[in-house]
Image 1: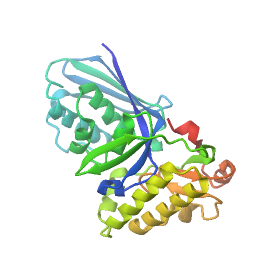
Image 2: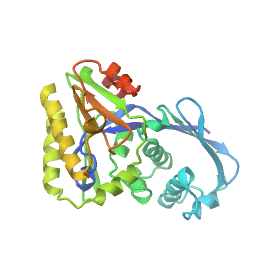
Image 3: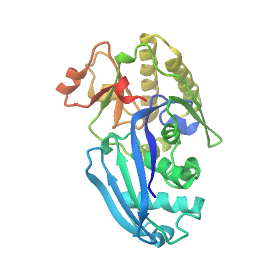
Amino acid sequence: MKQTFYSNGKLLLTGEYLVLDGAKALALPTKFGQNLVISDGEASTVSWTSYDSDGTVWFESTFTFEEIKSFQTLEKGIKKTLFEILSEAHKLNPEFLSDSKGYTIETHLTFPKNWGLGTSSTLLANIAKWLEIDPFQLLKNSFGGSGYDIACAQNDTAILYELRDERPYFTAVDFFPAFHDNLYFLYLNQKQSSKAAINTYLGKQKEKDRAIIEINQITAEVLNTDSIKTFASALEKHESLMSNILEMHTVKEALFPDFKGVIKSLGAWGGDFVLVVSKENPKKYFEEKGYATLLSFSDMIL
């Protein structure tokens, strides 16, 4: 019997990094995501194939149930991450891998893998749906993170997300600004490791309590304003604040200092997508700088 599960990709509009310490973040599920397709396979064996959005195979492997159950940390890269998720999933649902039935499993991204819209989070969310386990617990037990991406995976609307005592709380919100035609998403031509970025952030010892209060105010302003000027100003304040905490230049300072508009990092700084606020379509400007992937708000956001 074939089963198919789908989860949404994600973008974090406000609250990056500080969401780990309890800041309120505005997160947006994307029109792009990932499918997980489960079929019967050879006994006690998993045959796994992962497809990119263009149909090419980016990961392929066959392994036994026992390899998953006895997983240590000998594997590296993609296989290590996959084994880690499946091993922890087995602990949360011991019936998984308990019989001799095997599986043929395919994953199908609807966005290019290097875009960073949640290849791992959509996989984890899909596995949790399949095995009927708590995706947030699965995340915590495997590679960690705030969990906002898991919330986006299972919601079809923007969410306000926060951690309280390390537990996720989120509510659906309406985010479709009147000026959405002036919002664009630009890919920076490089993938950023969320885990590495989080580790760098956690090493910063700067006082964060005041910053969380400010980020919460900015998040509320971004969510509720009807003014593009107020919206843009709030994003600039957000960038400045995080630049100080991370001790990094903003993406605009580093790459686009002459751009006549606002640019804000989304999630881990240094890669993936950024939000662009511009009165006019900035496609030509960015193409001349060597950045060809620019999506409108309507093309990107669910």
